[in-house]
Amino acid sequence: MSAPVFSVHNLWKVFGPKAKADRVPGSDAADLTADQLRKNTGCTVAVRDVSFDVLAGEVFVVMGLSGSGKSTLVRCLTRLIEPTAGEIAIDGEDVRSMDRARLRDLRRHRASMVFQHFGLLPHRTVLDNVAYGLEIQGAGKAQRRARAAEMVEKVGLAGLEGRRPGQLSGGQQQRVGLARALAVDPEVLLFDEPFSALDPLIRRDMQEEVVRLHHDEGRTMVFITHDLGEALRIGDRIALMRDGRIVQCGTPEEIVGSPADDYVRDFVRDVPREQVLTVRRAMRPADAGEADAGPALAPSTLVSDAIEAVARTGGPARVVDGGRCLGVVDHERLLAVVAGLPLTGAAA
Ligand SMILES: Nc1ncnc2c1ncn2[C@@H]1O[C@H](COP(=O)(O)OP(=O)(O)OP(=O)(O)O)[C@@H](O)[C@H]1O
Image (tube, rainbow, N blue to C red; front, top):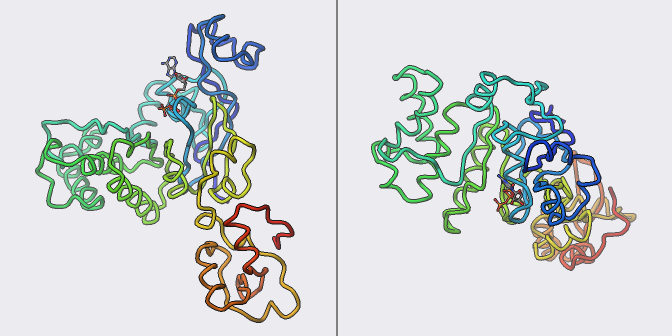
């Protein structure tokens, strides 16, 4: 397992008069309903006793309905919003005790944010917009133009360097925002619902772009979305938030295959399970003779692909890893996944 980049422990953010807000974490007041707390103290709990790690090289998605606390949580990571209580570390360094200079360095070099509203400078060209972050960092002109040109190419905007943001589509503008964040080569990219203003096709395009960039570079990413489909497509792990809490944190397969409670179960109810769950989860132990016959599938094969293999041959398929048969999937197991039935007697 890789090392954590961000490590968050018992984090709280309570909005409201500071003297009152500071007393809420861990107190009885924290258990009041949102309405009662607001009436009694003027405070709102946006993030409530949250702990998680973001591991090096992963896409960590923070998902939840509007108002669940996603933006507040992610803004707390670099103290764009000051946390009320708890601990945050980046590469083991305490973020809450950083002074202004160190914080500036954190935001400029180590954890850059890509916002939903791209924040592009309207009178500057694409190239100059991309170079902007480097300019703030104090890089020389030749160096920043060369680096910006490389990033423009990387996000698929080659040829449009000289345009102004107003001459670009929404998707292209978002690519400029992405290139600008990448140009400073941050350790972590933080995305706050970057694609929610885009139409669905362009949005899909940008999701693929993020996944591609991630595969090419292995850069750590924290990605906020309220769209479950988006979370499942791009997330290595997903933290699902509700009322400021993380109700479940896990891989898409864990969230869809083993929802932690009724809220999560309801949230993922309409997900096509066969497109998220793998045969590793669906398989059962092989009976005598089954370990040597039938098509072989890697454990990471999606159930939807396994259905095709099993339908074609008529018999069970083997789940094979490094030459070893881990178990088998047959019609019954695969149908149980599609139907959302519990998988009893799993092989692993
Ligand atoms: N500056 C603020 N002052 C008071 N309350 C706030 C402030 N910012 C956010 N909140 C409240 O904190 C809670 C969490 O808000 P937040 O914006 O983090 O949610 P979100 O999940 O990002 O929502 P969305 O998807 O709509 O952006 C909400 O109840 C919100 O009203």
